[in-house]
Length: 627
Image (tube, rainbow, N blue to C red; front, side, top):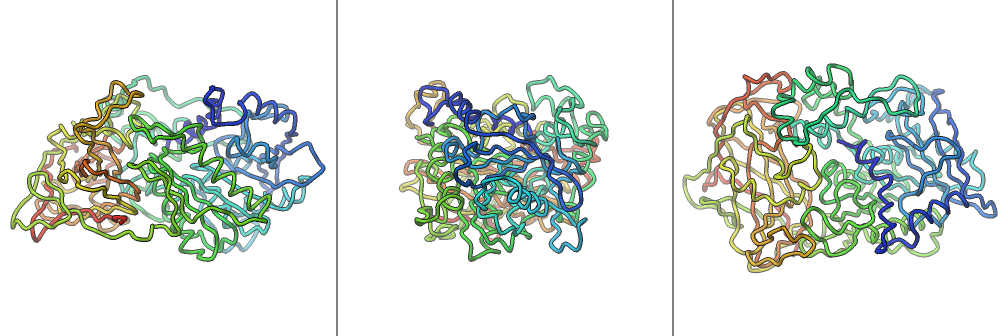
């Protein structure tokens, strides 16, 4: 949810192309010069149907001898630089597309930066519009496209749109605008459901991400091109210490820091459950009636919008069965495909520069086909997925991939994990969860929000007494997990609420080779995180109606871990870790049934958690194995 900071970092990310090993044909200086020599920049206030005007920048080729398609991005994160004489250094989705001479359009969405109107988080969709005041992001997209087609000279009548993160949501919403000129949309790491992806994960509040984000992302009362001052300064570089000992409680993050000044941050306090406030902001049920081509893009290691990526593709596929709906997932963090490499993430080397490969061979081809020249068939499959572990691109005609077989991976006594069910009559593993000494989400000192944790070595957690670890024997052959993972836990707690964190880990062999790029990393027995997720236990049965645990009573808890395509290679092990905190990635649970946004320090109490692995009460992971 630190989307503002991260998205702004994406803007100059191509500057790395100045290096001699650049994957791009031209340097950023050459591209910048090309734009100034060949493009004319103009700025407009485009009127929507209700009279509100949105700030819109147009970079149009100076050459008027032929017609060009329009490629548009709508954003809440500023169109800067402002001014007709101030140019971006690069325009469009990626540098390989620059010399195709698209008419590139950027727009500040309603109520953000230089645009008029009132901004609403994840603007609720109005499916049936009865008048000019029934507006949403799809209507603003429609009105913008209509204006562009009629007012920008030498356009060829075809429009495409793309966006990463929050702009990905606006791309999804725009895809259902039904404007006939819209021919291609690419929602990339799109926000889809705030309660499930950014604000909360299954009821657990993403405190570090939200706390950091809304200090910059503030409500505005009139158009502006100036960034507002932050509400407060934070000077502690150690996020674990900062949130535990300075912020202290979720309640104090508001009382002691925000103090009611940010309506967007405060909305989380007013709506801890999945109520109508969140439901009407869920774009997924509305992604229907799409007539044009779509390409959903995301990263396996997206620390922000993993849910949005997979579920946007699935919703579009289910609700629009007859359109071209392409899915691309690589070994990227949030927005990583827009960078110039993508080969390394933390200690993990994926063997090649996967980002420019995607940009040149997938993204550029997609837009070229639907906006410039569709005379030849588009040679892109339904799904192009990077298989981690073996580090190779794979193509599939369907997603999930055909040939995936559902299997159950059971917990056993003595920390064992197996595809066979337990036979022992009575068995469980227990740990003491202390919310005043929570398990850190990362072994590294950071500000509390880091993308690297998505593949980080978990040996720091393995060593803690409040983390349970279960692992298979050394694998005798490769095992490829494909599709969604679900943990089906049988648990009990001495408290009345509890968080449950499930992590799937690839354990390297003892003799794993070292990587000269990482001389200080010991890869022998490395525990690489593959997938993890959390659930606030009181939402285990109904996300809208929390209910307490009965102390010491065996209870079913299901945790959806999202999708993977990862091969655990021969000689490796599959490990699963269970814990009850992951701080400050998620806020602390007092481990008693209450509104955590009102919890004070005295509410936080220890609890003994048990995970059962016996014949009649077996905990397991439901996984897909690709044969």
